[in-house]
Length: 425
Image 1 (spheres, rainbow, N blue to C red):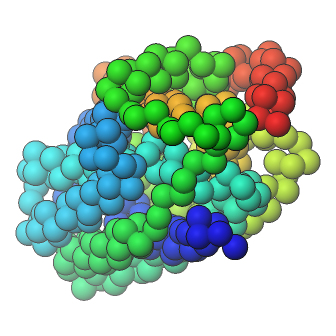
Image 2 (cartoon, helix red, strand yellow):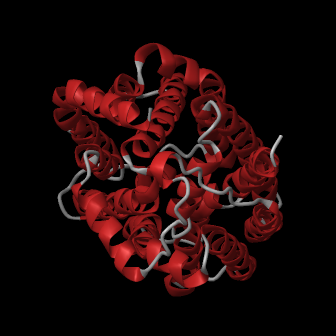
């Protein structure tokens, strides 16, 4: 086995450990940002801003991923730096939670730092992983890795809900949130260490290019790749994914207040409903690569979007907890299929040399649509006289609109992927 092959094998193993630790942070920390804001007494409009403005800022920051990789010298350096900053943002969150501060500014600034530092590295990480998985069964690896992450996320989330419930009974909810963010800090710090230990493989060069040295990167080349990403054959896919984010975030920021305030489920009920979704997602990811191999990634994505729309409609019509549990089971399966298929398709439609820019373009556009959707949902609740259930119905309708772009393009999309595969061969 060559040294490069050993490097790749070791890095893929460490990536699973990194992912499990990262998912633990998501479960005990990020998953409870909205609930923490509710506990601190923030309004629905403030919740919409807290959920979407940081996502939008992080998505816009991803447009700078290419230049940042160039400035720092490698994708790995950018990823590690972002992970460390994201870990450090927890120190401020711990202080806000411990003191029970009701001011929106400090909390918003810390959540912004958390998301910007975490999201600006995603295109670089995705391109890095695309190179690491070039010579293996990529779909199977990501399916198993994602399943391990989903289990870690579920365990972290359920422990967080139990800890908050105990804190609520003891009338120490602020301290309970501080404890959750402390665990998130430790997990992300350990995750950063795993990233540091991974390596970047050398890109394989074949044919007439095999004896040529790789071209030296420059800002001009980065700009050229960004223009290529905007003109690429996956542009229809990118816009469809962004439109889904608009429809989804019409309602996503308001599930937490709906469950905690309108339904009065308490932290145990909140953790139960969210935990059902995470459990179903972790189970679904175990065999998602088999489903994709049978039906194809494009059809899997279309089906996932249809079920995602159905879930929002069920939330609008549901009147009892068993129905909501059923909706969460569907949601877990649908979002697992969506995340798996959309990431794999983006990797396939992007040239290896353009992956950072294509992923950055997709994320930036999705962030813009997320913010727009959340602000529209907030307007419907605060000024148009809509209730939570009404917003869920509107969200269900808008979530179906990406199918207008994707369904007619299935044959074209498959032919484009086949042509790219032929060129690679």
